[in-house]
Length: 347
Ligand code: NAP
Ligand code: ZN
Ligand code: ZN
Image 1: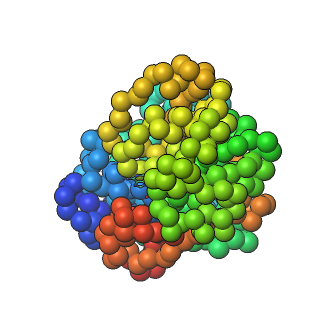
Image 2: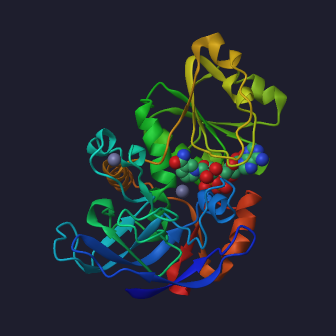
């Protein structure tokens, strides 16, 4: 066991505050990482405040983790002390079900273990995430990162990057695809960068007028203000694919109407609670509504390598650990350009 400083929420209504976790001693296949940066995902906020009704307290959020390896177990082959390494949203899964064998650990039918708030397979209790000085897990769930990119910009790729990359690949987005990215936040800005890099025509769908210039700078070809009726009419029956990243309650039916025949809207945003669905929005025009959860380990590595090759990182604002509660409030107001990243030297 080793004591590790962290920031935790003790209940849904208390702010995050310093807390000490006992991390296990490295097992033979474990990689132990000193965390340098950790991104702040809206899922951290949903979980800290128990908005999905599943949180076990205390909770140490954070699943966009980059750092340096400080120790490895005797059987570890992929990493050695001193290497850069990253951990995303998963730290374990059964490795035996069909999905695990295919590298789709996030859909493990026996239950995957989340980086925070998950239950360790050995019965040792809850997992604790990246708002902490150190973390360790089995080498199979540790990712390699480039030493040529700024580490703070790489951290958000571990969730915001893979969560948008995975559905774009799955639905074959590329040259000739008309893509709408709904919501310009942490996920949305990665969705725009990635879809543009894949050759798609990308429209930013946002309810914040002041984000229009940023959308263009990020590479979007068009910007549609979703509160402006004339602008939304222009994209009725228009998109092949919409990536919905919105974190708050919104009307899916309205955006389904922007899909052309055979179009698909993939929801990655997970606002509680889900609003009712008008089924004729799907039946007419043979549209599809789908969901997608982060990405498996092989695809996460593929995405990290892709981003290194295409020079893609997240646009970040670095914060100190003590400012996390204020950062959550700003995230709720949409006041982040476009991902907060905690500098763990400040913990
Ligand atoms: P974020 O940075 O806070 O961005 C969310 C964006 O949603 C905002 O920037 C805003 O964009 C839009 N929005 C917010 N409130 C809105 C409202 N009332 N009406 C319309 N639009 C609104 O959050 P994030 O970290 O990108 O996460 C987004 C969602 O994805 C969260 O629900 C999170 O839990 C979920 N998530 C899912 C997965 C997965 O595997 N499926 C993984 C990670 C995160 P505009 O200002 O441009 O409108
Ligand atoms: Zn996340
Ligand atoms: Zn499995």
